Image 1 (tube, one colour):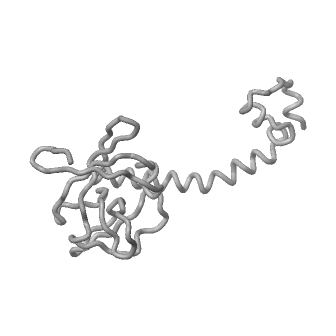
Image 2 (image 1 turned 180 degrees about the vertical axis):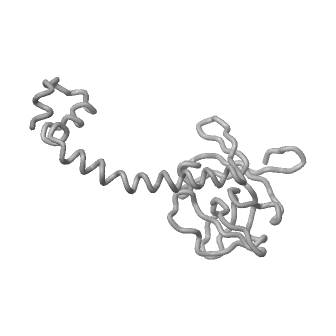
Image 3 (image 1 turned 45 degrees about the vertical axis):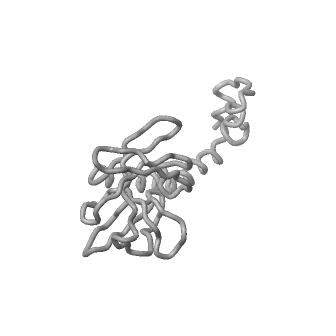
Length: 166
């Protein structure tokens, strides 16, 4: 436990991938107890799930009428349960990755991070097939294994005409 002002804070080791790119496996996260009425949309909270055993760290996507709905930044769907005050352990305020401490965005800034992660995931889904199709149908890349040779540093330089035949 570390002390931040008048409030005690705790640490938890993050495992999994549901909060990528915000958190990665083995990030050390700092969280502090928080009153239920102080939790806002965009905050990242640590809680005990009502349906599965492990402790979960997800972002708040909705607060209404005494319950909270959460979602992992890299998850497609919101969590299938609502949280009440007795399930919430605290709000994440900082993390430590490879010895470097970083602040965790909450509130409106946290919402922006969440939307960025959703947009990034969308781009990967949409662009991956397009780029694969381009790679597979471009003679310079596919027939001559140019990309593989560049990556392996075994590239034998070819003239422009050999790569771009009509």
